[in-house]
Image 1 (cartoon, rainbow, N blue to C red):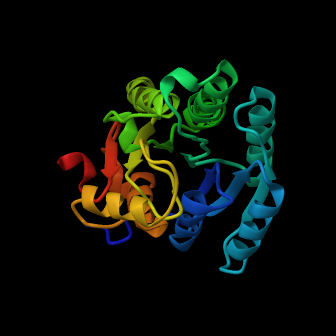
Image 2: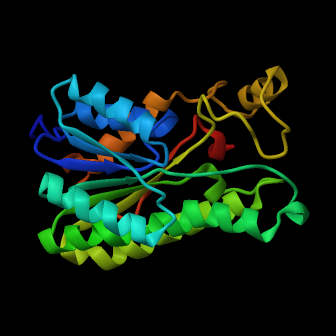
Length: 256
């Protein structure tokens, strides 16, 4: 068996929501395994700093400030990324927003903002970069979903609806694009560090941390770096026959 199954050398990865937290860790992890990066965020300063850090490791990196919920900006992003890098092999859809309140209290603008970023934005990016991948007959798209695409919780309706939609989008695109050599999968994280608000909980603090620890069989939050392995696996040749999967990374949350 090839011991270089996880090697991403020569591949170009686009990561949205890359400026901080999970997206930043994923970007650095992909670079560590050999990929060149296009790192994307609404905030230019964050991804410019990240790109500089990646470049110091010897990998190429380009930073772009984009609102992934807007089609025109996504199309421009895709065109520039293709022009500057020559190809796109990996897309990690990671941009997301969330805030918690009872279902009866959300207004239309709040619903539209969450669905627009977490679901519409994922579709727009998958469509724009999927065109390139279909043309080159190779590619891997990885959606960052959530345990709340699989289980219910109070006070988090639009977020859960968006992530449930992401899971089904993953399956539908996997079924449609496999014939073109494009694999589409998702990761579904549980509570990760630097994610501070839980459904049914009012905010960060000791009470919240005790609740997360009690509820998670492994007794703690995950670390952003613990998503690197699953993402690199799905992006790499090690997952060449994995398509349409929702890979849960939650410390056992959904097992109980």
